[in-house]
Image (tube, rainbow, N blue to C red; front, side):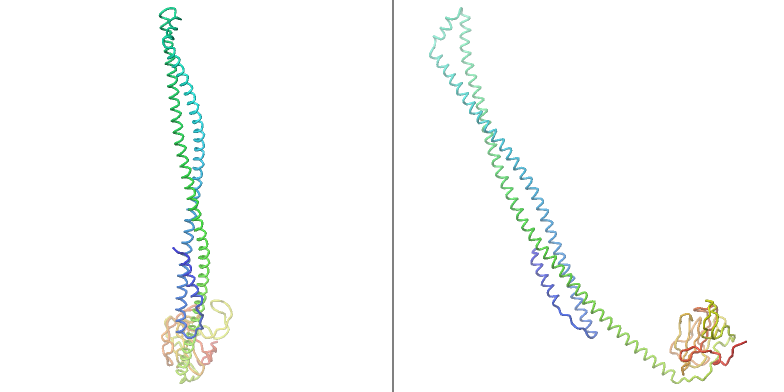
Length: 416
């Protein structure tokens, strides 16, 4: 793969991302469009980071392969040079042996020539003497047996010389064969030496080529690593821009939700004012629990029945069996119907002129928020929900949101 072209292509892509202008955002639709553009740029940058990582990993893989190949070439060069040294040693030994054998061949030839000259001299002498030589042997013999022995001795000398000459010829031939074999080996090892030097030269050339490629890959690796760092920085920058856009969108949406909620609250308040505009508090409330009239705890400072501490009791407690009917103390509109902290299941009714009543610890509510009720309507059932020690109704009268003693409004007084 052409890493330089790939790196150049990715660098152009990074530059294209880097010069994208940051735009001021206004309006939800514009925000969404800009968010989509930013997300697309982040995705593109992330893909280019992956491409750059793949390029860098590919280059590093090639570098590892080159390093391994160079290691193999190093070992081959070591082995080849060791083989060359061994060839040179064997060649030197062969040359020495060849010199020794050549000297031996020269000496064997001289010995053979000298022996051949002596043999020919004897033959010539015997030929020149002819029969006289035989007669000398005869005359010097005391009897015919000594003559035969002497004649045989002469013949033996001639045969011995011939055998010596033959043996020396054989020796010369063997030495000549040795010289020829050593010459052949010497030529063979010389050829091997040349071939080994050529192989080493080829390995050196291949090693140099791989080293050049290694240096080129190292340069490419530096470029790819730099490119990856630039791409990662670009991606981080785009991610930050995306985060800014997302935060602006969330802030815009939060503001819009707050505006809608405020508008809804204003609308409800207007509806509530409209509902209560006709209400006029008459000054008294009906008793809220027709089935029971006993008050177990009055308005004001008392000892809390659960915590055992002195605190301000904001209403009156009327004990009654579970499920007893609770009725509205006056005409009004339900402002709360549900769980209300320590009061448990609670109903709050707005009666106009700043007055409201609260009915707490119910087992069940019979009305819903916004519902208009009439004096005496069944609005809830007695229970013991929330912070309570038993079934009872906790009843409050509030004026402008502040709890007041309910007894004057119920035309009752504290029992003695």
